[in-house]
Image (cartoon, rainbow, N blue to C red):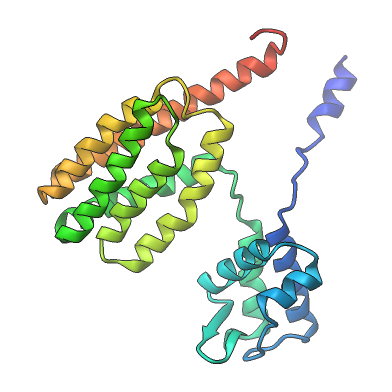
Length: 252
């Protein structure tokens, strides 16, 4: 038994590589080989999708990530080109992106908490009538799903993105937009949105909305901080429940 335990401990979880990551690895290889250089134009999404044998969505995801982190640039009338950096710097940027663990819920939640807290404060300071209306509409869409007892995951995402847009800081909004889908995906897998969580989140969303609509920065910060804290507690509880299920697979 001790020998078997030792063997098990030396095994690592299998990492399933996403199509976008495989595309990024091939682009990194072309940079290393010198086949791609600063200023070179990439083929169209359609051409790349055909060559890689994947859907255009996977290509778009890879290019979007590379562009956001400065590896690629989109130039009007020219298309997508390699940024004006040395091949070594470009290769290192892609390596960092590939090393990023997008399933690290602890790191993602911690980062989201920082961004969302600042987002709520800025929104309370800067929100226009139009952006407040957008937040309210997103809140009502969430309310409609929550009242039906549904998880309202997509509606939750739209609520937080509406707040991010109200900051009038496009970089902050983009950062939140980049990490929130991964958090939502992991919450779905962990069943965080079950057991009436949407009903509780609705009350939290309402407090956040009221604070932003009244331009109360301190209240917005408190409401968002509490919301993020409760989300983390809910995830921790779901994670423990998942461990219990795995430990006792015959129990329902």
